[in-house]
Image (cartoon, rainbow, N blue to C red):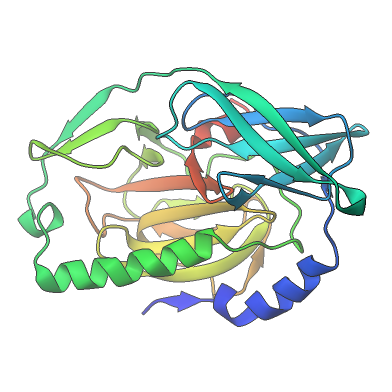
Length: 277
């Protein structure tokens, strides 16, 4: 059973955000890596009340008295100049350009024994489409109640078995690039919240298996997949180190592991950029 909190509170959050356009005070900044799948950390010379990049609202943060745009860059972006657009007090507008550098991601070839997980049937495709729409809605939500944290702890103790951005092939067939980090661990290993946030969705998905979506605020949202158990209730506020589930091998997997993704401005980015080590 899939449960979604953001659909219940979207009206409240819309009202809240409509009267509190401002950047958020943060304790640190994320690692800047202005490449496809990375983060651009851009100082802003003027105080902005809202920002937009590729039709998505961006996170504006104040750190040490300076305002920054914290921008997730899609994997599909080509190297070159990109623009973000700022709303300033008094109805003024400002455009800021930044450069995206090229990055090459390697290939990964995997063998999946369940053929339906590679070539879903018509019923599967209908389910997948509905699940994708549900998750897209969660990832595009905006919550200003939670203050984002850019220094995260690893959500599980294990071995990184697959990194972000790999060009993936399942049973020889090309699929979308890997949108997160895989951490291999024994089934039943505890999974912890890497930072504070609110549980906004839980459920069992065709590809992702048992899944949690955790909202860290201001468009920073994380995803946890293939779990054996989900150990938190929808709507729960967690802090870094709270147990949220256990490692499993549900959904499309080749063995027990946690798939961990991070979204920023509705864009999948490399979770490694949030880890201190």
